[in-house]
Length: 277
Image (tube, rainbow, N blue to C red; front, top):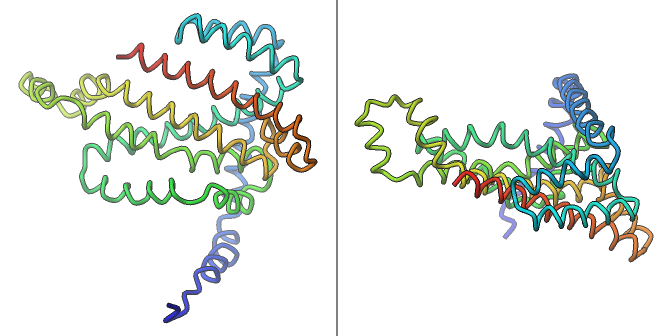
């Protein structure tokens, strides 16, 4: 089957080492410093207050958005994270997930809107999103290390790329699912395209968009753990340390901490989506 040679590896390396890094190295350094300051700021905001105060805030948020069952689970989860010494690591993971999710929403929702409005843009973005979702997640780590060094910044970049497709797809789907008779009624009342979007389509698409954000957060959490392989701090590093030392208990302890974060974030975002129906 090897009828000709395709030097994709050589082309890729030549592009990165001979053009991308020499010409845009300073740009990537600036981006890295900006993202690092954002991640450090979010991490500081989660760790500056005592764990007890943060727990009360999380419980209040869970109760308000998802009910008392989720609030009770949040309390139990916080007690688990505190008693196992994983509180700071969990806040570091939460900071990376939140920063990456915000970046994904800032880029993904506008692209989803454009895709819903234009068939041509939808045709262009669809294969790109397929590529982003099917490419093995470990592959994202290689350019992230090369361009942004080790630590939390490449973790945010790799997580952002991996977790953005659901935000785009669900925003696109939510706007397309707005009933035609509602759109026609809005047009009959003289709505402009902007008024149609912000007063009719986006409000009705909010539950679907929130489902996309929920999936984005779950993917971000899974990728943040994988990113521990490139030095990202947080619960993933606890699991990685357990794997490296064949310490089943350490790996299980860190893994359960990730489960706690995932369930709490999932229930809160689901509750937020239900409130907007």
